[in-house]
Image (tube, rainbow over all chains, first blue to last red; front, side, top):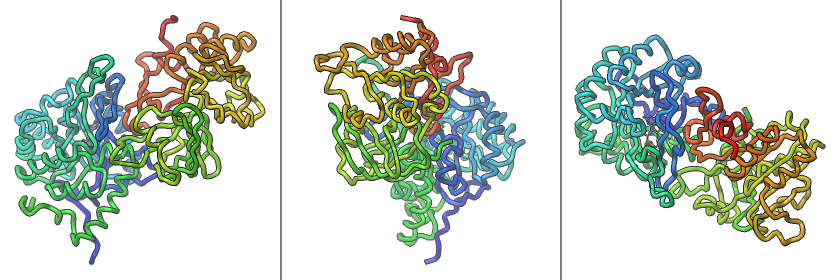
Length: 309
Length: 271
Ligand SMILES: Cc1cc2nc3c(=O)[nH]c(=O)nc-3n(C[C@H](O)[C@H](O)[C@H](O)COP(=O)(O)O)c2cc1C
């Protein structure tokens, strides 16, 4: 059988394969270049960037549970300017396909940040993080409101160059994620990234208090895989956009599961801590398993019931 | 940057050296010589059971092998010590900034270790002996005699260690009490010494207080809950002194810091 075509199209941008790294779990894409080539991935999604640097939350910031990880990092990041100055040139030079994850304090700020980006080369898209549970002004407030999502996506589309992709990352912590996805689609998003972390809480039995000072934290890892699959399925039935499936991936079978429920691409997150080369391994393994299953492209794994996207 | 390697590693040998404490040897080739204080991220291998790898300080390493000292503290460490010989883990190493012996070896050094904090200082002691510049004094403290990993020192290649225990000091060569008492005494005839310390936070804070009072510099090997071991997840951050005080990761910018660099240690008011 002929080779598999792993490429995936998100709006105007084609990515060579559908395996991306998830925001916040692989830094700015340059921290493992001694072990693997980040340009071999479909794309690298950066740690979420804000207009000004953020120091993030106090300790403790992570707690490992049996099947998942709770984190309360609080969007610590170097800030958009420092990223553009210190990281983007190196990513560009290496030919890394880069998607910038962005968060803002108020809805108008997204378009301002993207306008700033248009003065720089070396990135292929933005992912609007409308879903961080770990900061007071984390975008979650407007990330739960279809009206505000429409407003933000619309404002970003107006300044985004025509050859760049616009991904919108949604929270699973809502009653209807489909309503949010429809709003993003209506306003011109190219793809829906789903999901961000699931709100969770861990207790310290000695102090009889929540472990994290903010009480709530974001749950990720294998435990959230079925939740993420359900959300992707729900979104796939509601919109015609490509979906980037995220949540609990740690094997090629997990990737295939996302493809079945309607994802066109996936992001690997927490599992990278246990295996920093996992995303690279998955590119190879995905190709092999699609061949084994007689699929010429990832799309052919899609459940018939969903129809074509 | 040191030359990290990542890959599977087979458990070659294990030896019980103290209560719930083991030395584990894996087949693993690092790209560079490990500095004392550098560590490895070790994933026990059952991905269904462990979301995160475990940071383990490097006890020693050589041609194709790496040793760790593991005290059972939870599910992960238990899985590591209970694994069968020949079973595989995954190792990313060496990581972090270790003790800079090139400059420290010129100074009079006192090593102070508590519990598994002995690991980086044991390696430091060995390297110093190899350089012909042994530490002036090496002090180790544990709760009880059963907690002393004596085999670790048995070949004598790390020089002599003074042993302190909080209970059961009746055995001949043991000192009753805390390592800080040993440190205070050692400083009497080594007033200009630089102190290298690693152990429980309370112990390190006490060592820093002594160093501040007596004017001795203190280098510490810190511990913090880690996710990735490579600076990307930002789990293990500490604040540096100064205003506003840069926020750095223990895994990449550390784990070895001078005590005055770290805000929570530098600003602590004397007890
Ligand atoms: C330590 C950590 C930090 C994260 N930081 C971000 C972030 O900055 N922006 C974001 O959109 N998602 C962030 N996430 C969420 C992940 O991108 C991903 O959506 C989520 O973890 C689910 O995928 P996983 O189970 O594969 O980790 C973070 C997750 C973790 C574990």
